[in-house]
Image 1 (tube, rainbow, N blue to C red):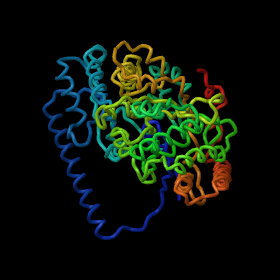
Image 2: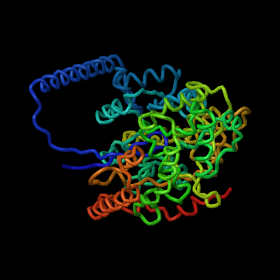
Image 3: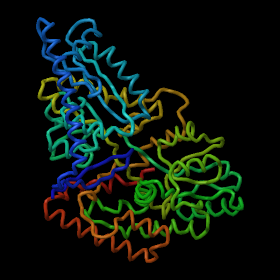
Image 4: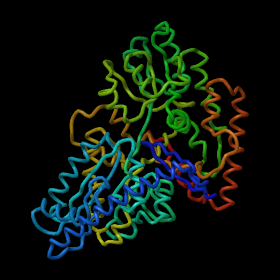
Length: 517
């Protein structure tokens, strides 16, 4: 059995899983028939494309070599027909069509507008036409089929950088001179597990998802409360809101039904009090004991009965809906919630986001955030000699102009932070968006090696759930056991060569985490 690590990014959330590739028994007869039918259908499809290509060649005096990418499988276009269509649309000249795929619906309108502008200006001048397609929930399945079949787009969001790099599906950016400036500019934000693999750059982080605590200021003002800066103050506010409203409004809601609650609303907020995550990027060791105080902090809401009932299974949208209805005083939120509370769950009251309170107000650190998944380049661009054209557009994609546009639309926070927000010239940006974009509050963290480990027993997510639902009462013992089991698995992974611990050591993390405000 071979085990490969997959890294997935959801918003700013870095998640990893282990993909096992093993020999499987022979399929049942029904499955064989089903697979045979599928094969025959695909064969018919490609025979149809081949015959169409022969007809085109027979009617064409000469066929120019096309540097463009194949169309998505459902388009039914061959390389030749794609280029002919592109040239017809352009009117004249040799135009290279570049295809780009994503599943980002939240910023689709901005991207389409900016890509249209590129095609009409730089693209027209350089002979480039970019075709952008946004898929829904089936994106990664569609992408995997297309890429492995050699039909993938030129540029695409990728959640398998290591796997695709090993298979030769994507190209290292160092192979194209036109990308060197971007590699150098974003080097301090990149790391193995983000866009680097095997000491090469296959992608560059493009944005971050930040987080904090949203406070219903109508409720706070009603009870004469100030927004909290410490855990004790947050607990006192929650209790005052719950008791003052006779439990018609609860002080706090932790939506444990949201799959990444443990990441955004436990691990990362705790780091603002202790200076690093459960994986210490200075020592290269797991330190779950550092979360002991944070679990005491959360238990305080439960003991005071100021935690919204049903928090154990409540999902994120339910928590947001209850907050927007005025039934919760404080809730964990992410930067994307600025538009959520305008469109999906509109609030008819003033709310403000604050950094997650800390154990000691005089000893605060920045809040770590992970870089969001970004774009890779199909290796065919280099093999077929048009990587320079792709690089031209990639430079535009990572330009200040593009970052400013998405920031002003309040859909993306550039990983460059204040360097971009300071260039914004529009009036009326939501004050909470500006707070979410303040990178003086946050620092870009390195990934953790969790996904490369084989853990015996409960994962940390399972242990967190059991602590917060009262199944585990010896919290200190459970956290110590987590550290021991994770460090044992880490040592085994390092010894076997699966983990290079240097990839997860950040010698500058202490300086990055310093609170300068």
